Length: 149
Ligand code: RB5
Image 1 (cartoon, protein in one colour):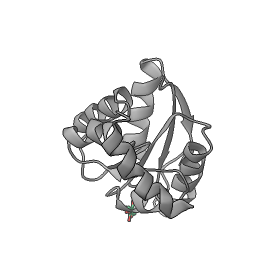
Image 2 (cartoon, rainbow, N blue to C red; image 1 turned 90 degrees about the horizontal axis):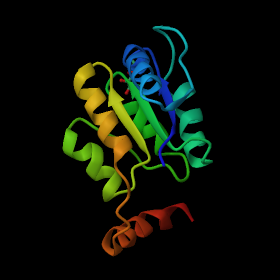
Image 3 (cartoon, rainbow, N blue to C red; image 1 turned 45 degrees about the vertical axis):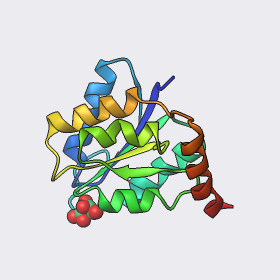
């Protein structure tokens, strides 16, 4: 069951992170906040996204949500961490299909490009989805996982 959610954001995603954090707490999720803890226009997304991704990798949290201005830097940084399958999501379909087919475990959002209402729909859909474990998807993810060996 998806219960403990990790969040991370730089200044470009700080406001959206706070909104998502409030939504998650109001809806019974446990939130682990990896920062930033205040709006600092000079902060750097790797300082928050990498610890979040490491927590996903080490199963300290069930899933992660990382936000920067575009979501691009967050997804690049998160995918460097072993065992993390992060994707920048800008549409509803991919928010659940990325979990069902590709076992996405870390959702990246762009705080400057995705509106709050749409972002919350992507978050809900991401958290409600589960990996299908269909043979063809296991085969595909195994080919990706082989890169980490
Ligand atoms: C920071 O200004 C911005 O570059 C960052 O939030 C993000 O968009 C990077 O991908």
